[in-house]
Length: 366
Image (cartoon, rainbow, N blue to C red; front, side):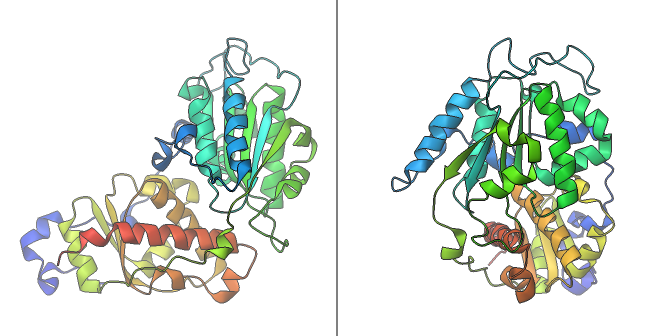
């Protein structure tokens, strides 16, 4: 698309021209990947006492009590991972794990607050932030890709707790890789906590996946206690209604008028995402105050769609508003995609992009 200021009537603010995500090709050092394994900014302030259990779902209250006690049990000088290690994993060897389960698995449907509880567990665990790690399954596999398997084991073995959100049960190869990693970390005394998605094609997908999870992590099942968290399933709520898109002119003017905004043509951005590893999508959005997109249209294929899901997650984590023209976000994915094995990811992306689109409405003047 053309961003000519004269054609757009933007000459008076041309000095404030927005940046372009397509012009960015970030290089992320491995130590940053480790340092960023903390709850995303959206969950900075969550705690067990900010989780409001549904009075009609006693399992939610029980989960809070169990997790609070689990966090308290990870304290003390003799706790696993209490010996500090540097980035390369050298230093005092971590203590061996005590007898009994050293892991918890949060088992529940979409929208019952599993990530809130997982982040609350991270915050409540009495250890320095450098001795706790929090990340999605994808972020963990990216770390292994950046450091190598043995180096990742050394780096994380000094930790007291590893939290894994959205364990990917639909990727057998990566599941075996991470299961092997977790086995080594359990041997080193690291406590584990996880949530997961579900295997494609399973009845009741999106809900109560503990049997699948415990089977897929193979020999680690004895180390996990499953906490069932009942609540309303996302399928009963339906997709959120996406706000109406703006015009190209409105989006472009808002981008020029918003300090720190980016402005990109949506199809070009999708092409660019194919050239940037998903582990760098967070760095891709560094310093961006708002993402402005023109000509939003349905994604052409599943590989592109899955990359967009990762970008949507990173934008949502960082609370970056998204202003767009073209089609509304609830029409991004085809019916075939929404009925396929990755449908939970696509529903999540639509929900998150819709929320960010609502956050962007104040960027449009008049």
